Length: 328
Image 1 (tube, rainbow, N blue to C red):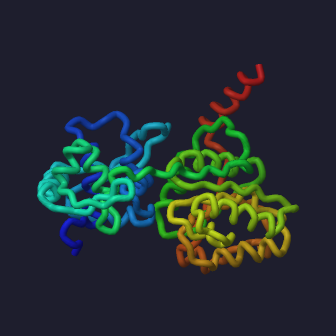
Image 2 (image 1 turned 120 degrees about the vertical axis):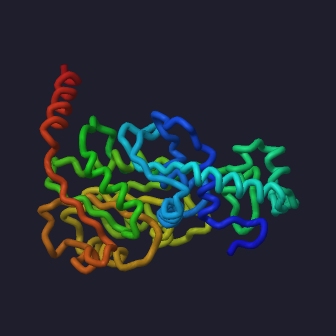
């Protein structure tokens, strides 16, 4: 049980979602209603969100829907409080209003009640601050670091159509306990474009894109990993630190025809525990001896694999039509 003046992760998520409660379902939901948005707003790892929302849903306090999300073209999983959830959130806030908690402002910590926090920040501002409570401390002026977007090695954005099921697969991967997702495709089937589209949608995640080629060395990869880790966390000193970041995604693009040392390097990192999600695009014609993962990794759920096929006819026609108009 949380100490007096503190809240459980479930309660903090509920308070956060209560800020967006509406009698009329919105046409588009805020980013904060998605799992990645909840993680960023509440200040927890994305890997902790599924359990919290499952518990809220089990208790009848929240529901999962498929809906449009601001800034995204496709429908995504969003979470909304139920009438019972809103009543529970209001009860929690009434209790917090009369409870004293530690509040950090600048470099000074003072004792304040929830009511006093609300007087200073307004109701929604107070809910946002309290839902980000960490170690029993409410930070009322806690600036959020902008996500790191290391996309220098990524290809330019391209016209993109279809691939809804493939994008849902990647959504499920991000919400799962798997660390690696592998997109297997023949050359020209769009695995890189799919990875780029998905990476662009991870707006709250720290992101690194590593372009691979037959000339890539382990030293090249480690240099990029080390620089990325140090940018995300100034205390990071090793390349391996990049593989244990709480809300990060690393994309390794075009895993094919690599040197033996690079293959061994990937084989080592798939065995290394960590929090960072890793997405790999790979050629389906890749020789079996170059695979960095094994069947046991897939069976254990550590690696998820999706074979990319050609576009559906409707999406292919839309793509060809847009390309033709662009040429003209």
